[in-house]
Picture 1: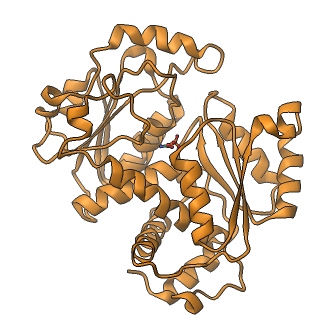
Picture 2: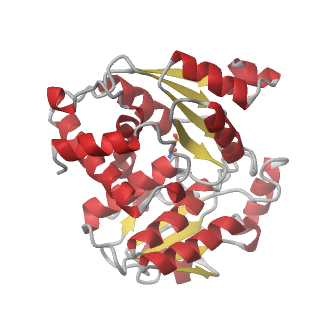
Length: 347
Ligand code: CP
């Protein structure tokens, strides 16, 4: 566990930082976030008060739906002693064209942080939040954009470490597309995973049908991060190749990069050719017997994954979802903390 003085020091270093992609945070900084997440998890479970953001306000701007992200951020802000305002873009003047600049400046003058989910249109969400961040005087937190879902991937890394220890070198991870008819899901979870996990020494395999390619810049980042972090990154043609001897599998659906923004129905139409891309018990047998089945949720049960797998002994989806709370709180506590807050007073 981090010492109080270590957290105080890091809080000072991280105060005011934006959390837009994991690419802008060093490995050492991510280690601190994970340590603080573990500390906050222990305090939450032990009912130990941890009001590190008393009277602080976080604005949550959603351009898309959410269960885990909205509720982990709202509950997290309450537990940290502050308050989160839930805002939907369609009920804001954003829907009448108000600029990211004006939104960033005005919300900054009312509170202490701005968190944004804008994930469905390739080329838009990340650019939007970076423009808000350029003008905001408070931290801007990415609750999922078109490029990355850094809150999810941080929680995933925390979950893998809880289950497999801190040394993840050589752990084989399969990130695979899977069939889902419900909606064209963003690309940011697989993109975020392939960028983050090789930094911590993991060997990541990516599989998807040809129409479901990821953003080229995220593939380049994955290769570069693998080179620097001692892990590896490789694309393989199918789920079988990715799952073979895997230690961790993350099979989930996403949309087509080219048509996702303009015509999301096209992603679902094309997907009908690939209904056999499902994670079932036969596929799981290719992986190691103790393989971790992960999914950020919501899952399309019966399509992306069978009930037998997601409810089975290898599934860690609820631990993964719970860690969204603790990691979100660590990001908020470290970036939003006011200089006057004394960690010791509440430890
Ligand atoms: N995993 C995730 O981001 O869930 P929500 O879409 O429910 O927030």
